[in-house]
Amino acid sequence: MIEWISEWLKQIIILVLIATFIDLLLPNNALDRYVKLVMGLLIIMAILTPIFQLLSEEYDLSALAFTHASHGERLASLQQIREQGEKLKTTQDRLIQEQSSKQMELSIKEQVERKFGVEVTESNVILQTRPKGMAEIKHIHVRASASAVSPHQLGGKPVQPVYISVGERETASPKGDHAGNKLAQNIASYLSDAWHVRQEQVQVTVDAL
Amino acid sequence: MEIIQVVGLGLIATFLILIIKEQKPIFAFLLAAFVGVIIFISIAGKIAEVLGVLQSLAHQARVNDLFLETILKIIGIAYIAEFGAQVTRDAGQGAIASKIELAGKVLIMVMAIPIITVIIETVIRILPA
Image (cartoon, rainbow over all chains, first blue to last red; front, top):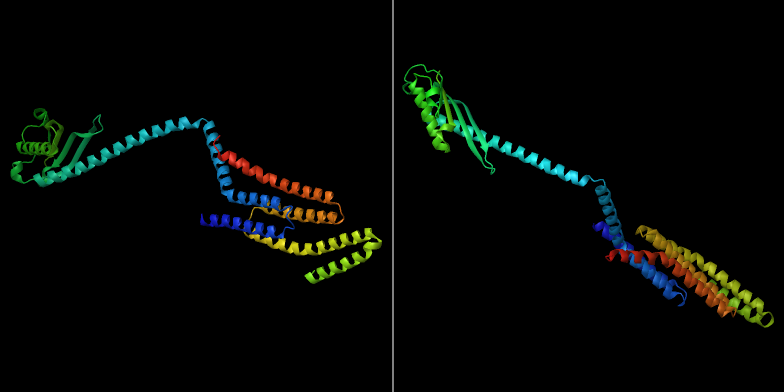
């Protein structure tokens, strides 16, 4: 920029110097006024050179824009941009859901392991999106292994795999092992309290080894 | 040619013309014109040097070639028209001398026409249509 301005100024200065010199060189007064007029025009033109460049560049730009618009691509491309935006938005929502459900699974695992002393082998949180765009927990599934549970909690007997869903407790739980059953219930009610979901939405499975 | 030589040539020519003028006025005029041409040509070399310096300066400053060309043409036209007008005026033909000067003025204005056109076009383009 500075370089360009200095170039421009140099041009003007040299022109003015030459004009003065020619004014001195000229023989008499007869042609003096004419030569002065032409030199003045030349200096004006040198001063206006940046404006000429600006105008010609502007002209080039507008011509480019017109040729681009004349192909009729503008509307189609706008549509495409909107579609891509929608696609990106849904992808982003999905990624956010995955990320948050993963975080929830991790924290559920930690909470259950700390509180009940069992080993959580699998925790699964399913989120669903409300129409307003907010997400809520649809289902929590926890699978715990009771190997680390102390014998008095399990009643000292080998425990069959217990499948508990709070809503359909009678059908889902096999008979017999009340300790594992109770543990699963405890975990389920604890989780429903901690995460503010209904008990039907929490499913706890305790595997006894 | 140095200034002393030019002045000496001029003085000698003047004396000769004064002597000849009584017998042959036409030769006196011819001598005057001839000496004038010689002085002009000898000075033209110096002018060429000056113009060379100007040209190199302009090239260093990257002045537009159009500007430089116009300036040099204007200088040439002014000098030549001036010289011709003076010679004819010395011969007592003031009318022809003024015509030569008129031709010089017109040619200089013709030189200016492209520049005026460009400036006016730019002004018109800047103003909103």
